[in-house]
Length: 193
Image 1 (cartoon, rainbow, N blue to C red):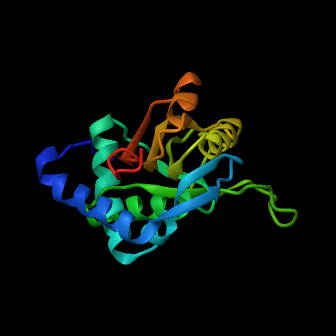
Image 2 (image 1 turned 30 degrees about the horizontal axis):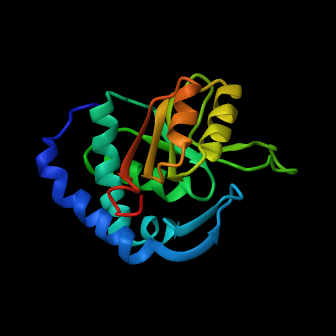
């Protein structure tokens, strides 16, 4: 995959539209218990954006650009199902539309009990270089779980790309394990932090 980056000023309207879409479709305010058990005054159901046609296109374009900006040329992108799936597929579709080779994979939360009993499905082979993707990073646990499975299967993780970083320690937790982490949008940029 070629890693040619685009002038960031050309992408600002796309970034702004992604922020607007997340706020309109995915952000709820109230009293929520997160998957981590923490309480929060806001909830981000990013799937309401990542699974929309417009969100899919924006995330694909911005995600592909972010891979290039980071200097990452993975063979595949993917992460823990279900949040990572539309993110990976969007980036792969954007790459294909630009004539670039890039595949996707999914990490199951548990191995299947039938068939091949794999935890990783899709286009992953041992030795592959990958970027782990995520819809929302809070604690970093989902991305960390995906990284552990990929590395145990012989993959080499270049870094982690999230659609939203809630800025609640997940990025730092992953960075302490040696991972580079980048996000398309932060909670601060959404006016939430």
